[in-house]
Image 1 (cartoon, one colour):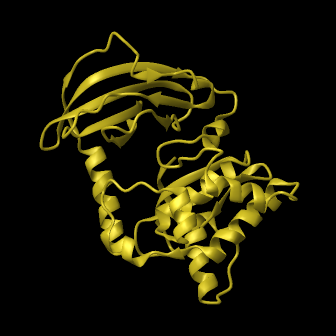
Image 2 (spheres, rainbow, N blue to C red):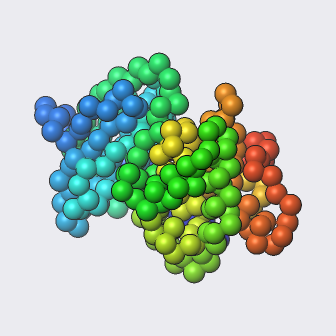
Image 3 (cartoon, rainbow, N blue to C red):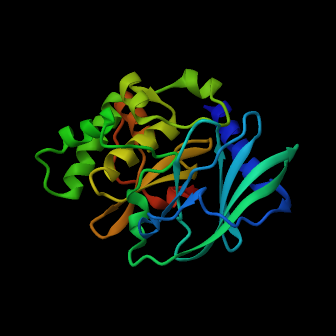
Length: 268
């Protein structure tokens, strides 16, 4: 678990310490699809060069999120989760060390009536389609549920009962690790990142806005991932990783966590 945390910390340090050394304005937008801007996402379709570290940075004001891209991945969707306003979307290619050059750049304007829609999408680290086994499981678990609260409880109970913490993965996870919801469902184990991605994807497929959140929690002494779910008119904090551990140890647990025990660094 601790090694995984150090890996995550390294990822965030890398994201915030990238040095942009050159800018080449883009005249074409074939690499950037904004057809789903009304859903609060953009789609990147960039031909990543083999052996060239490539990132996409999405910035609004002084805040930004940076993501790794890999060759052959194809189209990927990314959220605009910093609220309405002007965003800069940049493609970065590594020059040397931590230095990157901007090879593509565009500006997009986000103007949503309801910003919760951002947290209903399939994006790079909460990736899902209707054909996923995990999404079929979500439909199965909630077939007779009428309210969002009933649906959330059904999915929550399934995950905390059936998914175990993967200590082996935590000890060997790479800095570019991304969760796979069907892998988590099939293997019945994952690290906190995988728990949170699975829970978010399953609930989003049920039209329940759900965030994947990363940061610190008083429940654990390492960097952590959990979820915020929009229920009964407000965002509530749910931590399936912690509660799976509590359930395994036959400890008392409450689905809704005290938000004061969590400090958010990133949310997707």
